[in-house]
Length: 213
Image (tube, rainbow, N blue to C red):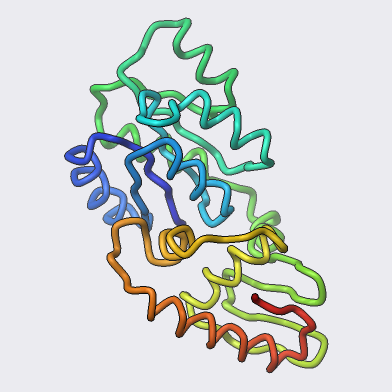
C-alpha cells in the first residue's frame, strides 16, 4: 500500500513516515496543498493523510478539487481543528475520516488500515488498469498488450500507472519524479529519462500502439 502524506509540519512527517513504514505502508510526503493535489491526482496512491491547514491550497479546497477531478482514494484528514463544525466541513468536503491533533499514532494507523481495507473479491480489479490496448496489473507487475505479456519492474509499473490513469494528460518532470520515486527522493532527471526508455521498450515488446511523447 502506498500512502500520500500531505502535511506542512516537516517534523511531524519525519515522525510519521517511519511508523507508516513499520506498519507496512510505503509513503511519500509533500508540504503544500498545490503539490499535494498534483500528486493525489496521479492516482498512484491507495490512501491519503491530509492536513487541513496548508500553504497555497488548504485541505478543504484540495479535497473539493480532488473529488471533482475523480480522485477516489480514501482520505484521512489530520488537523488541530476539532470542533463538530470543523469535522462536518471536512467530511462534507470529501474526507473519509477525521482525526484531530494531538493524536496517538496507533489510532492513526488503525484508522488508515480501516480505510484501505477492501473485500478480497475487489482486490484484483483494483490492481488492473486498462488503457487503450494495454492492461497493467500493478499487483502482479505485468503489462499485457495485443502481442504479449511481459513482467515489469516496480519503478516501470509506477511510471506506467501514472500514464495509464490519465492518458493524454501532460505530465511535468517534477510530478513524474514525485509520483514514482517520492517527492523528497532527490532523484536526477537522467533516471527518469532511463525509465522512460525502458517503458517504451516494454510497450514495443507487447505490440502496443501506445506512445509516450
